[in-house]
Length: 182
Image (cartoon, rainbow, N blue to C red; front, side, top):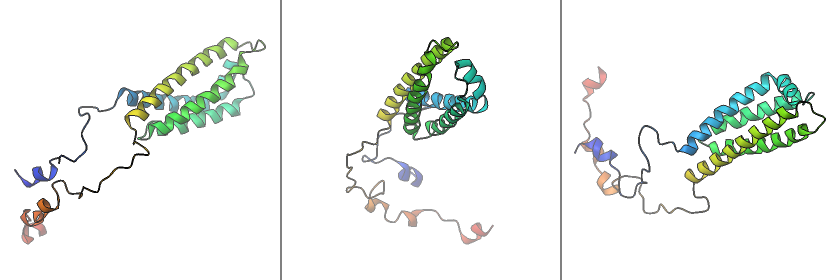
């Protein structure tokens, strides 16, 4: 067995590999990724076309609010695509609640676009459910077991222990001085 194999073999105390393959992303990870891209796209539309959105929903005069919601969507989309996707998903869920609160008054009889507002409310409700599913799944799979203290006192930081690691540098093949200069 060569030196590289000896250094890269896993010790019995090393963490287990739960999944390997082309992609070890769970369904929750993939859903979170899709929601992150959706958030960026929706945020871009809200930032670029707030007037069209407010006219379609019967919320004229709230263009600045829709732009702010667009910025919020982008701000939630970026962490949703990162390693800390649960942070972005939590922001998306909070934003969904705010969106629902904004759409509810548009359902009144005074609004000629209340049908569009109802469709938007159903869409936001559906996306909220997806956000909650993704948040629950991602949090469960990537939990860091908060509150549980881990004991690493039996570990040396060396895969085969201190005694097996002594002298490994002496046995490694080092190029001669002439080969290094070339």
